[in-house]
Length: 375
Image 1 (tube, rainbow, N blue to C red):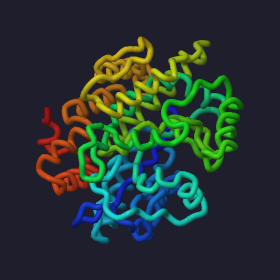
Image 2 (spheres, one colour; image 1 turned 120 degrees about the vertical axis):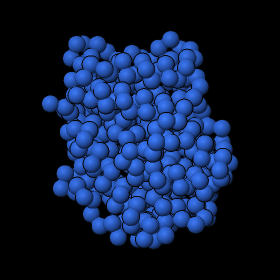
Image 3 (cartoon, rainbow, N blue to C red; image 1 turned 180 degrees about the vertical axis):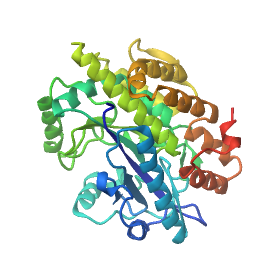
């Protein structure tokens, strides 16, 4: 039986007229009510700023079930947003800045704002966080070590934030550039135990750079209060299918890691600075350029690393019945381009075209033919 999965998706609310972020999360969440799959753990939540909302799926066993949770929440939130004159978009960063965003209410959000000051002032970044069930926290940390080499490739595949304040940044994931300003961002260190992980987090809290033990900026961590591995590498997924793809690959990585642990194979200790270079390259280029092979410590085409990732987890995907679907979804991203590439194509027709494309694909069940056949 396939291990459980769940996904947390962060969305931006944009004014339908100006395409600027709109601080109306409270109204949208109030109008939406409860998550359609709340009985299995699904929920709709506030995020850091009032321009953002989050949808968390319930605990799912299959990709089909996960897709239903993801799509249902997107459709619900998008419909309520439109009633308020807004568009719900799944994107890593807003194309236009708008007014300075207001923090959401709550003591923890206030503490975050006070701790990080100007770094957090316009951090309207949205990600796609995947949870995969594991037996316990010790297993979660051991699995994380095995995931470290692959996190940059998950980022490259997801790249969906090329714009900032109305300009093309030249990066595929500006969200990751923004996140790199925070302490302890990027690929997590190699830990020899759950206790070692917890000591390091406690140390960062004691140093005054994390609000509490439930906070970190690493791209993977043990689930907070959950028996999961949480992978947080990806930009917000432009489409439901891209969120499903991130979840399937992440579950495949966790299953592959557990198989290695059962066989007594320790995770490779890839160099932290090489991992940092790999994250930077993934943020800079997405799939459209070089990536970094952290094993050989050299630049290679990013699409080659994606193929290597799929090959690495192919046995686990076959065991869960997901291999054919993952291969199809990867092929579709390579035809359509990443979210960043699609945004740039739309931007040739102006900001309005970007907004229309983003809001449309957020609730796609299938991409239109023009997107399916894009080179």
